[in-house]
Length: 358
Image 1 (cartoon, rainbow, N blue to C red):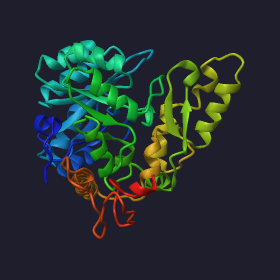
Image 2: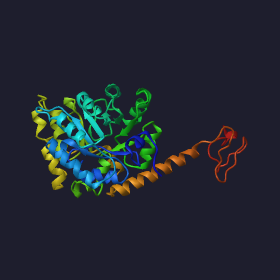
Image 3: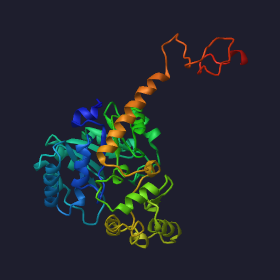
Image 4: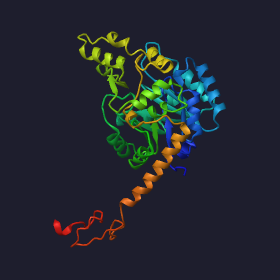
C-alpha cells in the first residue's frame, strides 16, 4: 500500500524513505535502485571530481530509472573549496528537481537552487540550524540525530528528543528523520513523532546494489551498535566512524596529544584512505562512516526487497497500534479474559485487572 505523506506527495515516491547522500557510495547504481524500489535515490555530487563528471552521472542515473531521484550537495570547510555554484548549476541544467543540502553556509547555493524551483531537503543536527534553514526557504528538513553516521554535530541530542523538538518548534515545516533507521518499525515510529519520512544511509550501504566491497557490507552485518567511534571531537568537527584500527588510533592520538595540533591526526582521517576501503575491502585500511544502526542490520538484501519489507513492517505496525486503545466506556479485554471490580483474571489485559487486590 503506497504511503500518503507530505514527502511522498511532494517527491512523487511510493515509500517515504530517502537514501542519504554518502561520499564514495552515492553513485547511479545505488540511487537508481532505490528510486526503482519506490524510495528516493540520491547521487552524491562531490563524489564526482568535477561538475561535468556530475552531469555524466546524472545522465547515467536517468538511463537506469524513470522515477524521481535527487542529488546531495554538501558544503564543508576546505582550504580550496569546490566550485559549489558550478555543481548546483549542473543540477539545474540537467533538470534534477530534488536536492539534499548539508553543511556550512548553504545560503547562496540554496538561493541558486530555489530560483530554479528545486525542492530542497536540508540536513540539520540542531533545531537552531533547522530554524535558520527555514528562513532560507528550504522545503523539507532532514533532522539528524546523534545516532547518525558521519557528521553528528556537537550537541549529542538523539532522535527521540530531536524529532519531538522539531515537531514543536518548526512551525509546521515538514521534516524527515535521519539517524538510526533500518526497518519499518523505525519508519512507523518516525511518523508517530511527526516526521513525514526517514533518511537511511548505513542501511543502504548494506544492500546488493551499493557500490562498495562485499567485505565492508559483511563488516556492517557483523557489527553491533557499539562498534563506532566519535573522531575529531577535540576540533569540534565530530564524525561517527566505524570503529576499526585506524579510527581507534585517531581517537587515541586525539585524547593524548599535548599540543592539540590537527596535523597529528590528519593522516589517520584521510579521505583518500577511506575511499580505498570501499574498493579493496580491507575494513582497517582507512576511516569510513557508519551509524549505530549497524546493530539493526542483519542481511544484505536488494533495495527492492528492503523497501518492500519496510513498507510491510511499517503498515503492520501502524495498524496494530490502532488496537492499543478503545473508545471511552469500552472495556479492553483479552480473547479469554473478563473484567470486573471483583475479578483478577490473568486473561484480562489492563483496565480493571485485579481491582480487588489494590
